[in-house]
Length: 370
Image (cartoon, rainbow, N blue to C red; front, side):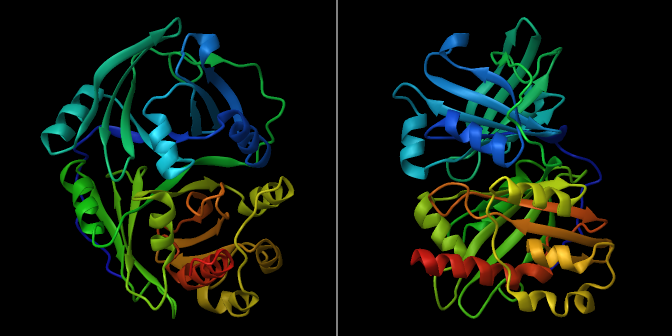
């Protein structure tokens, strides 16, 4: 592992956090039901023909500071080719900012491909200024600046009654979002975020850190100065068999978002609820827990529930962290969700990589893709 020491004294762009993640879906209504019942999100807004939008429907879901937007096309437009190529997948990692014009102008001048020029959207609740640029694959970043907006989500979304269907599980905010890119493309996209967005290289991993006897990958994490926005970028590395990144690229038909990591304050309680509500997680070999405390040192949690729930633990020089990964949340072996609890640690679970890879490879083998 190589830790990058270079950090910016301040951000080039006035970005605050991930505002929301938009997922294009084949059936947003059914997907919304899944995320409400299984992950505990509440429906806070709806956009569609009933609100004057003819070409698509969108459901805005929220749990604390985590916002997902699930969108399905109604007419033959750009969403349909995206879905045909990628399946249900993240289209937009929207970023909250205090100055959309500055973010758009700066990133385009530095080499970003413009997708939508800055413009104001508004309704009876006020105004929001947005603009969009492209990143890896067919993924985009929309800059979101709330000018005077007092609505539940964004202009155009109709507020919904209190969601009696949602079963919250204690999710707090997005910790990081991981992108998978193709062979020898990691440096290109790391440099994109460094040179265009002004991010810093936070930490890097090579195939000595992330590998098993069969497969490997390279990964570099980029972040803004506050570290509220963190994007690990993965690429395949040579191994005896097909890695999880290669499997993703094959079934996603190119680069895209591999997973969204969401933080909780009590991972044991959160995962207990999620399992009871039907969320499926990767299985971890029992041997992982036999010497866990010898490897990571003392922790506040009892070992028994961690093992029962398949929760992983790792430590860095700042503290320790607990994490767990769902199985893919759709039929393609692509997008999944990570749940993480940080007890001071700023790392990404290097000590868990091998156990995680073994679990992923077991699922790949079941699918015939290893």
